[in-house]
Length: 197
Image 1 (cartoon, rainbow, N blue to C red):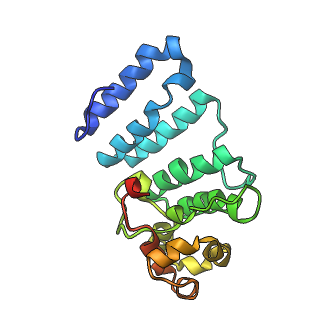
Image 2: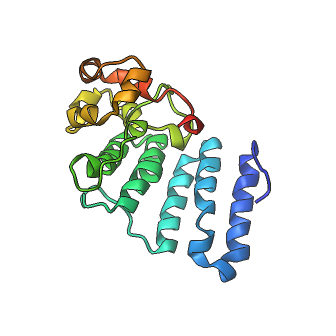
């Protein structure tokens, strides 16, 4: 794709052009990489409802089941989609309760032992963006704040606090006890941009 930074409308046009142009050669799977770029461009244009519809179109075209929180047995790939696509897009669309359940189920897979522990889960739980403007920066803390609730009410809160790597706590000069008692401290764990990780 051409460099379209700064022009969300051009990104959308180009993503759709790539999917049409290369569908026969690459198939749906080969062109699906364009969808997240389109989601982000739509969010930049304040069209989060359309971004959500495009996510569902992507899922159908790839033959993926639409994730729901009734079925909490997510595969690693589904947990990734819940955390990176579903939860953030629901949040950006103002559907906070749905976003909370989606992100909780995505995170719970790692915290309940269903999936091997991922040491950097904290990047999905909190950062200092208030409020986040892009999908990649939406965290569970933002969702809970939008609902007017404390992250301490998340059933896996204490398990999460135990899972934060000690070097992360040291770098941010926060103790496990402080974090456990004040969930807003989670924002300190991930105050840098995604490229800093």
